[in-house]
Image (cartoon, rainbow, N blue to C red; front, side, top):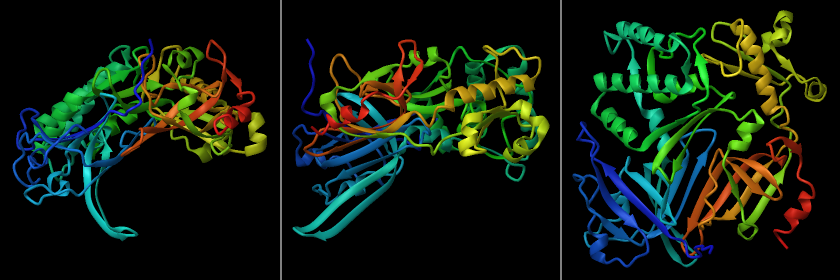
Length: 469
């Protein structure tokens, strides 16, 4: 029998890493916001943020609202919490107790849905129509932001050994060129090597970041994607390097997708690294979520031509192609894919990718240039119908039962008689209301059973009119 939850189960937990302990990760629970009974003593357990952290395990029912988001485009999504300015018996508010770099866990329906890092705490007050209005706001970014802050500095002004170590990095990159390595192997190698260098030279804070990442972050890499390193022998650069920079060079847009999302089954923040689902089998293999019509509150869906391309090509670091060169140099025309029909309307609209690694699953090139031509054709197969796809926002009441899961970025969505690609999800909750999700979708339309795009959804207007009926 199907069961569902009408009363939202909301809980927000805030924890604090022990930044003084660098050999392993130690966390303390500062406060849990929920709606079980709590006393003034429960609220007063947490101390001021400037004191030494410990397991306060305070409780409060002072959470007013929250928002958070996850996107297929990046990993540093944002969240906000709004909290009442309640004072404990020590005259402290949550603005005095919550600190920057505290870790926020947002639960809905007894499952963690989002984890973020606190960066801003604000106390605001104003005179409203009914008197003083005071709130505390807590803001920050998603867990994937840690990959952009996990830094390695290679600079001769700071480290005398840097030139030798760079040579060592170049030598170790031969790991990639020795045989047919997988994309997963390349990512694992550079990720582990990066952590090793951090351990050898990192400061205490970076060591704690490493422990946080090791506990909460895992990778889900396309295991069928074979790669080789044609030209670029070193992904490290002089100056500041982040692990995200390294990963982005291995799996560059727009050929690959690199994004993060919280996995409720693994209870981990999962970094997805994969080639765009160019093939119909890849599209069909993506998990699909179905929206129940009764939960759909609002829809804003349509087509536009703001993201249309007419020229597709791939290049490698030493090739030196530029958009202007491709347009005017005759002998480069053989290396590009041109959409003649759309060119007549939109003119020269290039889409390109620069690759340090080349995929070899289905491509057996005689040389790098032949492989790049085929990659340009792959780009065209994924992006050429951008003016035909439906895109927009679907607002739904967040709902979970024993037959359905929350929609997740990077998966498919079944709604309004068609399928969509979930590009971004923004979730919000306000006291007294149910959690709501704004789902940004792209690539919408009719799809065949085997995953082929078949055009726009018929009678879409009638389907949309039923929402407001």
